[in-house]
Length: 127
Ligand SMILES: Nc1nc2c([nH]c(=O)n2[C@H]2C[C@H](O)[C@@H](COP(=O)(O)OP(=O)(O)OP(=O)(O)O)O2)c(=O)[nH]1
Image 1 (tube, protein in one colour):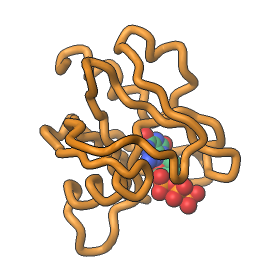
Image 2: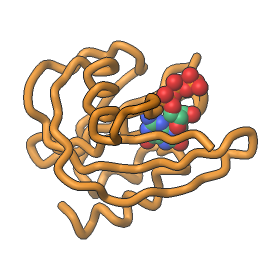
Image 3: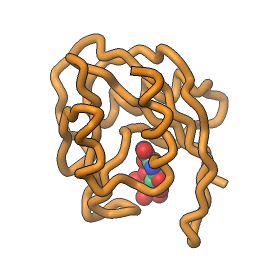
């Protein structure tokens, strides 16, 4: 099972979502940015590092939301989401195809990765 952390980043009351590129697994799916946890890293360290590497911005994890275990068939992930605050920097797309800042009620217009869907229900009570 792959251990993955993702960041639900709030900026100006909007939520940051990123679109996976054609070359990545789950091509063109929208997701909460993040990635695999390295050996010896805490979840918080992994999320701060991944967001800096992928988007060149500084964030701070505020609260662990929950985790979902999802089986995509060819691989299985344990995806843990953190609610995060945007601290500094301009978003640069270093790995993803695109990004959007969307209002909670508009998230359903995007083709979001299956493993992320349960978080969206959870978010209603958090923001
Ligand atoms: N970062 C991120 N990954 C997600 C989310 N939902 C979801 O199913 N995933 C999957 C996609 C990837 O297979 C894996 C995360 O690994 P990653 O973000 O490091 O992806 P990657 O491109 O390095 O993976 P790979 O193709 O190199 O194996 O978890 C999500 O919200 N954020």
